Length: 294
Image (tube, rainbow, N blue to C red; front, top):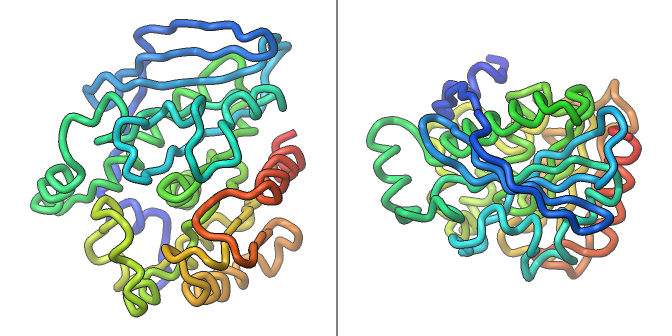
């Protein structure tokens, strides 16, 4: 049986949601602007942080940014402006100076939404046959809808980016939503069956548990749904959360999907690097988006 985006949505318990802007506060930093947004998503008030060039002439390419986990429940969307210890530096200003409108929202249980623990939220949803990650992806897709509807954004040139949890948010959303024109994801591309085999799955949060998924698909199968749209994968070969064998098996499953889309699938694999972004990865991301969204 062929695994489809529709089947993937069903396993996730994905829900189509809207995102309505209720407030916007703007801060001008000279060569870029930060917008602090309030969005109504699924009946909840959600913080969004957006960066963009100061001068906007027509419509611009955009990036939907999925923030990471790293146990930083209080951080959420602030990662776009403040960065994290495993990032080279904050990407919001960098993307804005490169000409992109970039949006990040607080995922459920993060940032201003950190009002319940990950364990409590995930367990409650699992009892109802849903997953916390399905909730996250439903909100992430709503943020994409908001981004695509902005007057300063070219809806046909929206990319997705993320590291770690943000990596999975980005490539899984691209797998179920073809409005993502290109995706660059770092440090969490893996074959989950192999991850379990090696015991590496225990290092990941319960948020990522999707009941029944591995009976039908895995990391490579999911990433293959993105083809033939451009995809950049960056990994560290000493990343204990995504050991080399998990990446190799996922990559082997993914590659055939791009057989007729030569040049649209890229892999940056860094020897001796753990669960972190490197300068080489950042350069590759900027070149990738410049090529496919520019």
